[in-house]
Length: 175
Ligand SMILES: Cc1cc2nc3c(=O)[nH]c(=O)nc-3n(C[C@H](O)[C@H](O)[C@H](O)COP(=O)(O)O)c2cc1C
Image (cartoon, rainbow, N blue to C red; front, side, top):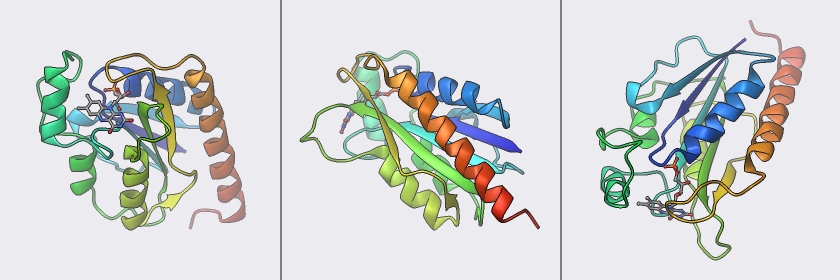
């Protein structure tokens, strides 16, 4: 089975989680890990996972990516026009494809909004079979690194996705 993980990252946190998830999925999937800026084609992937930073309560936009550059990022600088929002805008119907979405964002109980929730809804609307609820991994602050323990959470999340997909494949084999 093939898995495509597409991530957007301006300070490296979402990219770091994407790498952890990719490593974990390799036990069961032929994994491709791609920066959204290359607009990787979904092709014949069985599983699509998208990861994005939460910006302004949602998926990033050109304006928020420009804000991130003003906050001092160098990792994601250069192509403020392409993020997971735009990637999903250009993605064709994905009827029946297994999919999941995660984000990284600040751990502030009163701060609403999550890029993962928005991406999850978009993937579902494209016809995907969602194999996990939207998942957030947390950072200390707006330009700060991941909170200790989040990579372990990502490994557990990847394992749960693997188990769900393998079970689904056993109960509804591909045509
Ligand atoms: C312009 C901008 C807006 C942000 N807005 C939010 C937000 O609304 N809620 C939140 O929890 N975190 C917000 N953050 C924090 C990011 O979600 C967090 O730093 C994330 O881990 C960045 O991911 P990256 O390192 O992959 O770029 C924002 C960060 C930036 C730069």
